Image (cartoon, rainbow, N blue to C red):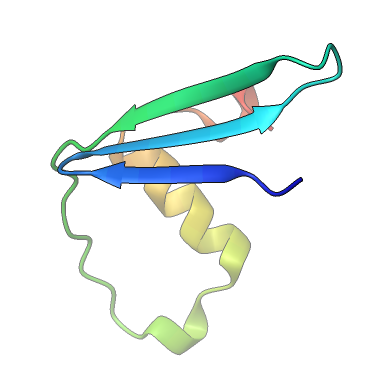
Length: 65
């Protein structure tokens, strides 16, 4: 079964059947992000852009990878 995705206003709910045959879900609420100005998008790898997003949000990538 595919994930169930519900989008309402500023909320996204993703539901799925877990290994215990329960309907499990996670709810995401929108919050304002921001903009990061980059010199030249072609010079960044996916990993480098991921690191930029961690950094601008005050997170240490090593704590989550």
